[in-house]
Amino acid sequence: MKNIILFGPPGSGKGTQAVMLQEKYNLVHISTGDLFRFEMKENTRLGKLAKEYMSRGELVPDEVTIEMLSNKVDQNPDAQGFIFDGFPRTIKQAEALDTLLNEKNTEIFRLLALEVSEEEIISRITNRGKTSGRADDLNVDTIKNRIKVYNDSTRPVFDYYAEEGKSFAIDGMGSIEEIQERLSGCILDEE
Ligand code: AMP
Image (cartoon, rainbow, N blue to C red; front, side):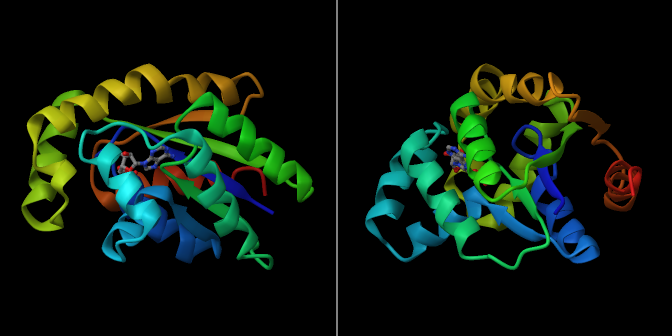
C-alpha cells in the first residue's frame, strides 16, 4: 500500500496534483477541505461548524477533523493506497493518522511538500477566488491568516515525518505537467 501526503501551503497546487496522481497510481484521494465544503453545501451540523473556522482561515478543531478523515479511510477498505491532501495539518493529526494506518498494518510512504513563494501563493489564491466561489479565497485577511496558520501549525508536520526520512521538498513552481513529473519521480523511485 502506498500512502502519500501531499503537503504545502494553501494555493500550492495540492488539489490539482492530487487528482492527477490519484488516476496515475490508482490511489484514493482524500481532501479534508473538499469534505468540509461538501458538508457545508449539504448544510449539515459538521458543515455549519466547519464554516465558522474556514471563513476565518482557521483550522477546524483536530477532533472533528480526525474523526471525519478516519471515517473516510474506513469507507475505502479495498484502497491500494491513499493520497492525503490537506491532512494532516497539525502534529496531533499526524499522530492520529499514523495510529490509524498502523491499525491497518500500513504507514505513510512519503510526504511530498510543494514549495511555492508567498507572492505566488497569494496571486494563485486570488485568481482561483474569481472562479472557485470559495469565500476563503476572496478575503485578503483570510488568505493571510491561512498562510500564518500554515507556517505556525502545519509546517512542523514536515519535520515530524522528516525524522523518519519520509519528507521530500518539491519545487512547486512551473507548469502543472512539470510539477507532476517531479512528484512522480519521488513516488516511483523505490519501486
Ligand atoms: P483546503 O481546501 O485544504 O485549503 O482547506 C480549506 C479550509 O478547510 C482550511 O483553511 C481549514 O479551515 C479547513 N481544513 C481543511 N483541512 C483541514 C485539516 N486537516 N484540519 C483543520 N482544518 C482543515
